[in-house]
Image 1: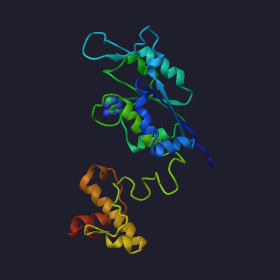
Image 2: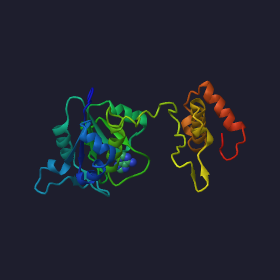
Image 3: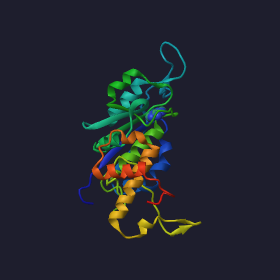
Image 4: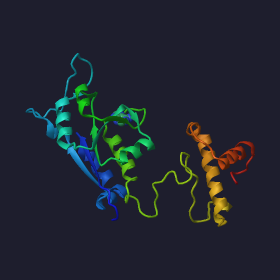
Length: 252
Ligand code: ADE
């Protein structure tokens, strides 16, 4: 493969078996096989040092829940970290994951994803963490699913992860907007037809239609995405059409 960029992702978890199936399917599997990414699943329990291989303990000061032990986390991170590693702790307190953050992470050569459980981690473990990332404002039972989300989103941006037919460029021309509607054969399903413009072969009209649909969907479903947008002339015009034209059956 030309200009092979190899990323390593080490995942520190108490439940490494959770990752097996998602990482052995589809594009992630293919990327691993192609050598685009190397994923290591590491069991945090291997870094416990006491007789019972204890990874968590009761909180000082009392209260509900268990706290993951700092020494276990620090030992594990130190065992895997290299000079240019980005150590990320998945937690609902973290920086919200966005495509911009995914792009940042995809530029690293080594990601260490630390998955927490129970009430959280001993505060002193933060000394070995570079950033805390959240996948959304809801609470999951642990950091494993968020680590899968981060891994999946990062891998699809790595050179060579997607085939020639697939494009990671969510910016191609509708960047920052929701996707336009897609259609494939047949031309009619239960009386539902493919919009005429898509079978017209007129590429400029098709692009304009797609852009308009993307704008319309975004306006209706995610208006927040439009707030920071710098609209170009064509987009302004399309928006005017959307707002001031009565359209039947979503035709044009
Ligand atoms: N761990 C538990 N909930 C989480 C979330 N929403 N994001 C990241 N890590 C988490």
